[in-house]
Each structure stands twice: as structure tokens, then as C-alpha cells.
Length: 305
Image (cartoon, helix red, strand yellow):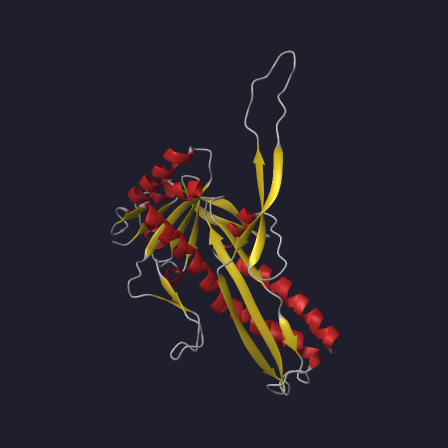
């Protein structure tokens, strides 16, 4: 039975990480971390490449020798979240355990984990932008949304130039206003947007793809419950009373660097589980998001006043 549970854990870990990458609206941010090294726990090693700058060419000696350094920077993920689930042995036998547990974990990630990770990432970007004063505010309507959006895009392009791909992350309550704007069809186009192994067709404005996010995940501040304190047993997250609605976030595509990892998923069969005659599944997720100072300076958040 121990061999089976080990194999089950491997199946679930790979499947859950893929589901999160493709299901999260912020999943595209994980590509910016590159080929990270993860050996369990709350640390990842992120590849970092540095090179020498240009030097003068010498007609006799030729090129000046440059240096290339590939190193791995250790990053610590501050979000350490988890849950344990029991599947009664009378309802689940070994032959259908993978299907039953897969359904439970898949639904758990889809309805609980993915929304929380999205919310954490967007609120962290908003908080860092607020601290740097790179926030615009105002009441967005179908009459002014286009002008506000184009002005914000222009502010970023003035810093990074025209050749940098920008991504617009927009609240699901604000996005419909674009469709109501006069002559919007002359301005809005479609763009190919890759997230993990998924290739999506999304709306774009001024060559900037627009990623629409449920408004509940686009707040400036959240409480992430511990799931143990009285009144917080259900766990999860909730916007604080002081939270503001985020209308949109504009950032270079390569700016936010996000990582999420399912730690070793532990599975105990009914004969091993001492708490109940049931399959026991321990789920643990580490995740975080980082932005370099230069990347943050090229980001802009628009929120309600």
C-alpha cells in the first residue's frame, strides 16, 4: 500500500501544479521565474544571468573578453498554506481512489486555491505600487475608460519604450465598459496569449493583451485566514474593510515573477491513518511573487478613489 500511495502523490503533485498554472489568471507570471529549482520546503532557486557590458573594439587585438555568469538566487516564499482531507474508506476503495481524490483536490484548487493565489498576487503588486506612488485613481465610466487606459499605457511606454510588451490585468466589472465605449471596435483587437501550455485568444488594446479577472480577486488588501482561529475555521481569504477595488494593473509582461509549488503531498491509506478509517490527504502549497525595483517602476495600478 505504501508504494501505491507514493505513486499517487507523484501523480497529484504534477497534475495540481499544471492545473494551477493554467487555471490562475496570473499563471503567466510564473514563466518569468525561469527554470526554478525546487527541492521542497519554502525556498526556490531562481536562475539569474549577468553579463559584462560593451567595450571598445581594438583593430589589432580584436574583441575585449566578456564574462557571463549563471547563478541561482535563493528566494523564500512567504505564503505557506495547507489543508488535510479525509475520504471515508467505505465510500472510496483503492481502485477508485485516484478518481475520487483527484476530483476533491481538483475542485479544492479550482474554487479555493487558485482564487486565493490570484488575489494575493494582485494585492501585493497594488501594495508595492501604492508605496511607490505609481497609482492612478478615479471613477471609471464607459465615457472615460478609453482615455484613462490610454493615458496609463502612455505613462509606462514613456519609461520603457515601444518595444516592451505590456499586459493589462483588468477587473471583470470594468471590462464590459470597454465594449460600451463609442468606436471601441476600431481600437480593440485580439492577441495570442500563452499561459503554460495553453494558447488563448484575448482582447487587446494598443497591442496590449487584456486579462480579465473576477473582481473579487482584484482588491488592494485581503485577510488570509489561518483556518484554525475561532470564526476562521473555513479558512480562505476575504477583502478587508479598507480594501479598494483595483480597476486594472498595467505591467511589462516580464515584470512580475511568481512561483507556486505543491510541496510533498502525503497520502495515508485507511489502515495507516490513525485518526479515522479513511484515506487521508495532506495538501501543502507554497507561493509568492516578487518584483525588482526597476520592474516595479514600470508598473501602474489604477484603483477606485
